[in-house]
Length: 167
Image (spheres, rainbow, N blue to C red):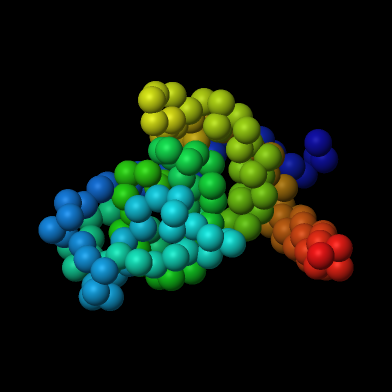
């Protein structure tokens, strides 16, 4: 690892917000209030699908938070670009505390997805807060984080082009 990089436990750099379920009387499909994100079915193609709203939010994810599924379908991630959303207990929001690159964190956590899935326990697989917070990640300087994110975006764009040309 380069000398300028440092290993950190995720809990020392990021806040983890655990979701909370609402009762059916606390939400609806009438586009009133703020979006209510209930699980992996709300994640599609790196975007949030909004189909429920609540006027009684209890646990909020904010714009820029990285959302990760923690129950049922474990380890699916999407950036919250919607603003304030209520998250159910099947979702955790990872919030940036130190102006680090959240896109870099998403790339790093993607490399841990299989490990996260293997940590899932129960009849309906689930992971705990500690399964996420205890992950030790490499952290380069901010400029290097940005360079890595740009390089990953370039590779993804090229792979998408190749995929389109093969279709």
